[in-house]
Length: 328
Ligand code: RI2
Image (cartoon, rainbow, N blue to C red; front, side, top):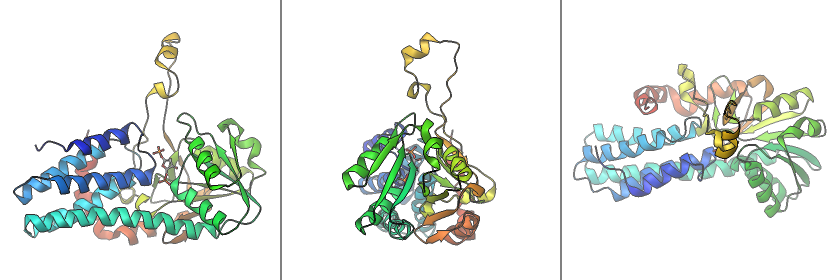
């Protein structure tokens, strides 16, 4: 088994600890880790080179289980490498191909976020009050684009316990110059009836159009539904999960209780169990639109995006590379 590149180990550690976080960023960093593996490989044979990439891929896949952007980015690169390796191409070409695949993924991903910004900005009206939850690069791209177009609107950001990523969103919006109000998660329903819409990001979009996003998102969606407020999701197509067409759902990550209560606080109430799921599932009937780089779709069209974007061939790929997901 080849040893893992030090920089790759560092990236994997930072994804796990959430120093690197956000479904899109995680995917781009995973691609960067494979890029580094390819660039710094000392392999003398194509088969050793492929094994080195696989070792890095496994390490990255073990970090966080829910955002499908991570396995999708790895699959994008590994599928191309392995198919080329089967054609017996030389080591130098194989390395170039891996570097190109990783670079393409990163560039396409950044382009997708930008396109979502442009498409989504068209749905922002002057004078609107909009709620968002957690911290999503795709949502911020929409808001920043609309703001730069001269639209005036105000954002209510949920704090998003326990990691408080809503505060990162509030800080970013403040730097852009967008009027922003930060609220605690418990105040969501109190303010919802005043909102014109909600826009959130996504970690995974499943085949039936349900969206997996930061814990609390489904509560925001349900509250929006009750108040007849539109609920939009901004998601690049690499957040759509081909596996879900095959019946395999992502695991909902449950993080350490110490993110909620410190070790000392926990010791003071030894009989109390703390649960800390990171994500929840918003069903399609609570979602009005999904904004992708390929356009705006209804959640019911998620199935078509998966078929078109990944194709039946990709479902095959996904079956072939299941081993990556089955790692313990
Ligand atoms: P972008 C984040 O997950 C949040 O749930 C956010 O809504 C989602 O990723 C998408 O973020 P985490 O990594 O890709 O903070 O739009 O657990 O930036």
